[in-house]
Length: 189
Length: 434
Image 1 (cartoon, each protein chain N blue to C red):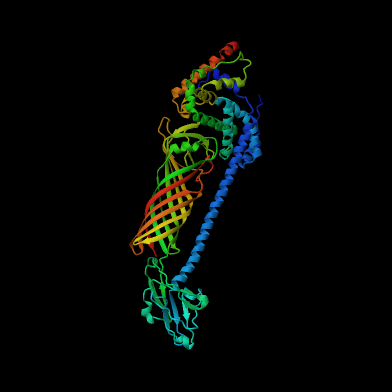
Image 2: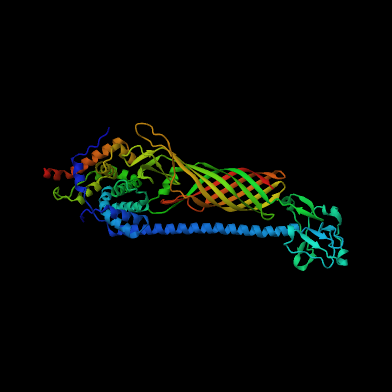
């Protein structure tokens, strides 16, 4: 389902945050309704499937409601919430890191294939699907580097890997995605 | 310096997904609501538990005060009834009658007209007033004169029953242990034409001690997000803690002692290197959040970029001042006194810090000592204490003390887990009775 990007006026946001600070359920739900459609794609990129993404989203919103008193309106609320979501995704990744390592050794996950000839018709969900098919280690590095704009040094700190591994994972992830999209890229030219 | 180099593929993804939105399933909000309801229930439960603890403390305090007042009055009656003051009505001279001076004592038949005032007798002494009636004036105590008075108070006693207005001796009962309690002090002084005997009781004591403790933490998880506390169990090690304090004791009865005072305690724990995430602190500054088993601290951020940093080992230290109220059962064996007691403590947080250092970077980062947040200012706990006292002088003794303290309330707030510390300690002390 595609949605029009909603924006919320600053004053309304302030009222909703104040409501959340007092634990008002209607404000919490309103804030969730505004921001959950923006946050779900982010969670989907970090997760392996829809259920995992919704778990991250749920954890992220719970954290946000619990610690909303720590939001001091420096920077946008959306950026603060994004950071929470990313941290939740990282926590989930770390808790599954052992499994992830095993999966990353599997060759199957290193071959992402597209299901049709579609660059012009490619949907956002299909692009997310390609990212989700990457191994967890590749997916994390790709997301953090490409979407969050982090440097390899920072990614290495976050994921407890070396900078070299981070660079190598990014390179591999790009190669896999490029290969998966080759027919479409050629068609685009 | 490393540069961020996006390529064509990166741009394809970022451009395509920049404005993409998707609505999650309805169940997600329902689950969030359930969790939030759970939070509220937990808060209500904690408030309820808090109220219960306060109520228990108040109840214990009022019971202790009640016992103190009641037993205090009873012991006044018991001890002071051993001596009474007889005033001869016709001569005005005072004589003292000592009731039950020995086990072989046969109580005399008191003449009619001897009145024992009620327990509200001035100076808390029972006075036998003999009226000027002739038969009353002829009555004499079995041991006349001051020499009789100075015979030690010992072994048996009689109960004076004011309602009957007669001295009614009862079956003699042994009062072993009283010598330790009274410490053999018998003072005499004269007031007007009356002579009073006072048995002085060592009711009060002051006890200073220092104790080394081993601290541990019981963690209770609040939510289903993850096994965060298990991570802390592995990551944080309790170091040796200590406490020192002064306890003032009041001997309620021969066997029961009530103590209160001031204790200062500090405990520390060592955390393994971990990752700290950049968050906005309470003042709106972006800092690295360092979590510990007790609370969290904000390490100064040296770089605005990045979401996390590696931290070195962290050492957190908590300082408390506690006010305990302890009831102890005591018994004596030669020069030793043994105590076993239990009580409640109110703990007031006086300081909480965490010390750590951000790792990495081109230059070594300085170590930071920062305040720990997310801690309760007042907590309550149970205290169990056993003590062996060895009398080195009549009024002084050395004590070996073993304590166990358990938190009734969690020391932290706003966290996914509650931390309940416990301490086991062994210490030495010195006690003075007066």
